[in-house]
Image 1 (spheres, rainbow, N blue to C red):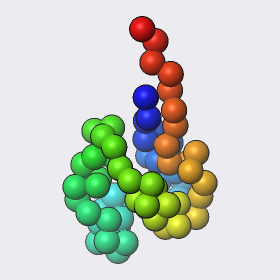
Image 2 (cartoon, rainbow, N blue to C red; image 1 turned 120 degrees about the horizontal axis):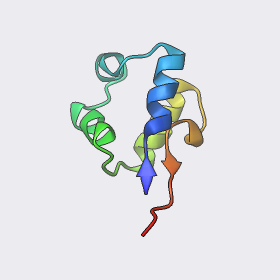
Image 3 (tube, rainbow, N blue to C red; image 1 turned 180 degrees about the horizontal axis):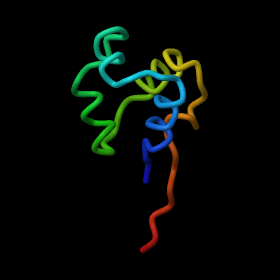
Image 4 (spheres, one colour; image 1 turned 90 degrees about the vertical axis):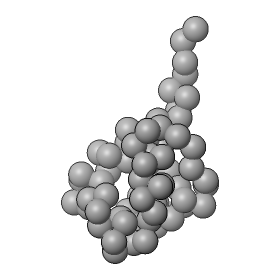
Length: 68
C-alpha cells in the first residue's frame, strides 16, 4: 500500500501549506483531495511535488506492506 504520510511531515518541515500548493504552485484541489485520502496520483505529480519541496520521492510517498 502506498501512503503519503511522509508528504505531510515534509510540508510541515518546509513550512508550506496545502493552500500554498494550490495557490502558489497550481496543484489542483483534486490532487490535494487524492493525497489526503490515500488515492493514486501520477508520477508526474510526485515529480512536481519533489521539485516544489526540493526533496526526494521517499519524502513524499512510502510503501507499507499490507498484512493479510
